[in-house]
Length: 459
Image (cartoon, rainbow, N blue to C red; front, side, top):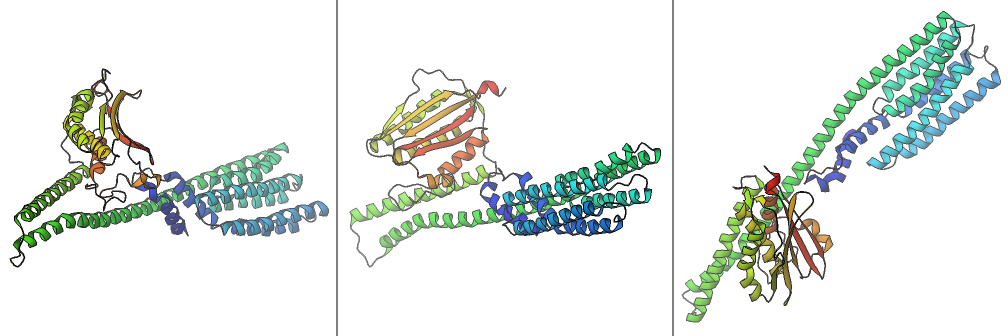
């Protein structure tokens, strides 16, 4: 059962594991502890009922029978009701919410049971009969020791039961005023303190075990995700490499086939296609190598104070011809805005911006607009924004945007691309201690932004 809840809750956490923003690890450990606690919920109920009958029989001659019977009926009816209720509750799916509900409800029920035993210690306490006093202390002390064993995984239940059952008896002992009674009360309190220490030690051991089980399960989940990502990467890589290779082989075979006469103008066209496919293949291989370096943290970065205003101006100049060819207007909105220096690699920053601008142009509409702006944020960072008026990104695909080779369903469209530009850009920005993000509205356009630290704050 612990492995079952461990794996189930770890699976619920799986979507967030990739970024290590885990489903809170503490919640996983807590769920594991509650599952251990849940396995023992019947034992204290049965023990309480058996001991209540023994107490009633032993005290039948010293306590009014109607009072004793009423207490016996109440405690056993409550135990039966608890057993039925928690059997139904235990059958619910073992997710964190249901487990926490079980533990909290059980703690309240345990507190009520402890209160009944505490009332018994006061009501049934025979002032001048030490043998019966010792018997009550023995029974209630035994219940406390049993609570330490059964509730160690969930200490709130132990605290609730032990405090409400033992403290009234200790107070009743001391209220007698006799030296022997006071000593008995002190001994009971010392016993409870030792039981508390035992429960704490047991809880710490169980917690360490739960943490190891959760960590093992999460590690397995990460390895499974990594293996799945590797498989998907190789599949996508194979597809991306096959496309230009097929083009090269196809046109090459047409040119080399002596049985087919190819007009000179077609030969030039075929040769051009071979060159274009070869360039695409080379670009793809270079990008894959760069992605590999980025993901392993081996990118060469030369971080230094750089002028974002100057870099944006260069990028706009470099992309203006492509924007004009695609009938897209490219605007630099910075103007005379004064910006602090950023601490970044100028070549890599330019690479990221060129990729964002290129995407804004490629996926825009005829007559569309791409604008660049920048501002110094309040968090000591410079934010650069690239806005476009394209078709936008469907919300259902937002979480796939930075995945390698994922072009969000446009693989077979007329717009060429490798699908790893944004993946590389994200790696570059993060290795320059920055952030990258986006906002998009389907049918209206997208806004991509990067944040880089100010040079003045890195000294």
